[in-house]
Length: 229
Image 1 (cartoon, rainbow, N blue to C red):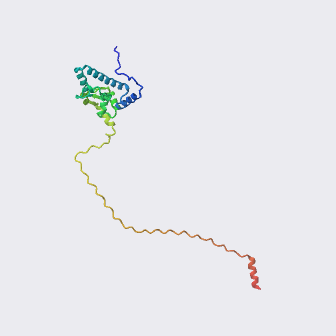
Image 2 (cartoon, rainbow, N blue to C red):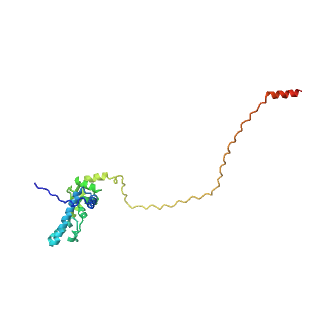
Image 3 (cartoon, one colour):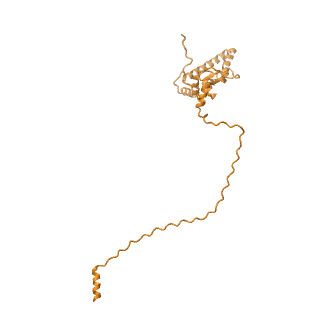
């Protein structure tokens, strides 16, 4: 039975803080599942650089043409660039050619996570052929043949809240609305002095009735006797 070998190499200093921060940034930017996918892309870049250094030393035109044609095929380099530009490639140049990234940048998926989900579930077709590998390197000739299955497109259109209740565009030339004329201001009336309401006088307090004091009976008898004398 054939023994499967790893297609990547782990970093020499895995606990370096700067390396960890760079790897986390790339994982978020390209929606990678784990660091193994990042290490595979780094191994591919390392292979291209090593091949370019070897060709520069041997000056073999046939090998140089084969390497440049391969990089042009995947749109990593252009026809104008040469062997020296291979040594200037970065890890982002390799990750940009993954199917997951291209599907998201063609606006066929809303997020990188959704792009990966569509590929793994078998809803992405390349030239009417199902592709289930998010790390697939897309050649330039196949980039325009990427599409989503018809059933999945219907489901995405139904679940899109922006498409619901959207009015249909009106056909025909648009009529210009007349400019709104300013309303005339009402004539100001002369102000008349307003009389202040008279304040109600406070009610007068009634004085209590004075009680009549009755004279004692002894005084009345005395007055009668004096009158008889």
